[in-house]
Image 1 (tube, helix red, strand yellow):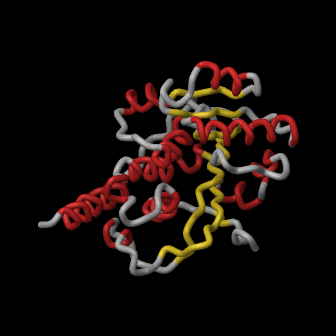
Image 2: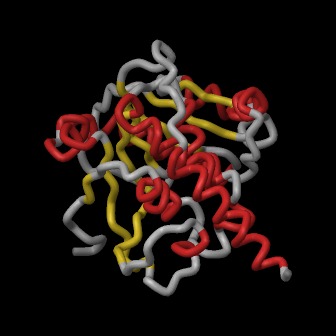
Length: 239
């Protein structure tokens, strides 16, 4: 058996398990609404600082914000102080990863993990290089979000029927628009199972990312595995 076949077999076993996995929601652990940003490293931190500055000073956004990173090697004390001055809680992911015994190692994997482990019950995830043009607080009141508890944005590419990820995870193959995970909106109280499935898939990034581009379509196939509802923004990028 070659390495690719073994990786596919491992994913198929995981996919079969995740289809019926239903982890209990940790009642009392999360509360409120907030923004989560992954902001480790000098370049990404610079982007995140600009984003937060725009949110706070231009758009007057008052939502609490968490900025997640991989330890002091990515975000120094002075960098933390800059974000702290903008009323941002800077979160070192490493202790959370250790407590969860997780295999999260890079920024793509960190995104679903940070959403899952943030203190917020309802999360707007923004990539550090996103720049909203209006206060995003009202997305939590969108009707599609109230109905489903999850809103995703479409990418400019499709996940094809021929992509091996469908067979690898035991899902019916189909052609569908890919997700763009530069921003997403999740109510963890209603979507805990699907979010947990996505976080588990991203621990298998070594094999999964050979079939899809980073974390973004892990949300698509994760929601499929969990048979969970979601809303897709009806406008394509650049439309």
